[in-house]
Length: 267
Image (cartoon, rainbow, N blue to C red; front, side, top):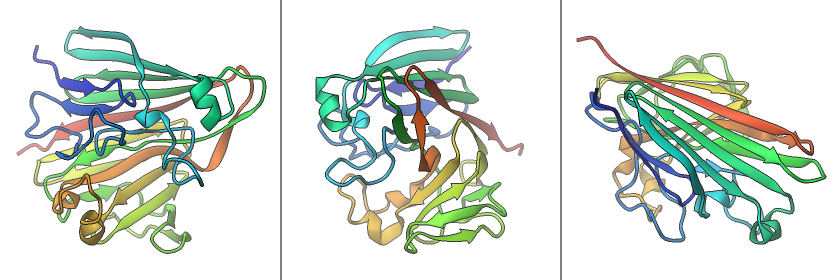
């Protein structure tokens, strides 16, 4: 059986590739200009945003673990499925950035049709630890102008391009402008891609929101690790715990799970 191609970096515990053998394109988009081994966060794939999501005054956007070295705890391939566990632990260096003791695990199981991802946060300290987080997944699309995101009808969302105002989604979502939305109390969506002849189902457990992001044409030109036309070849649909923080008690752990399932259309 031909299994999928999966690539995971030690830097950031970052999944950069999932290529099922029967798909015309990888499920994940990763920029040709991505800084895979340097100090910058990797543009594309699945960045791990933790222990905060979004900006934080005086600190890096989306937390610090996405640029730090992780350790591969285990890796194996069995009957067409790739299994991998990545881990990172708090240290004196991280304590200066985030004054808590913790362990973070990323567990991945990827076949030719399904990728399951679990981000497990452990509070190893003696005080409550507030966390916001996301699996900031970049999905590859043949042409963003043709892609449709289903399953958001009737959901309330915070529109970060409109001063954080809240709106209700009317119908399916087609991206036609810069889009940065936090869909509240949302745990499932479907990305329909007629160019790549497939649909991608995204289901989240342990989160309280899904984020949809695309910079669109003008903003894409200002992002140094994207080519000007890259906006038309991806959309981010993210499993998240945001904007409210998750407070982990001492000794407690929490799992943010995401299942991605890809199906080709029947011609």
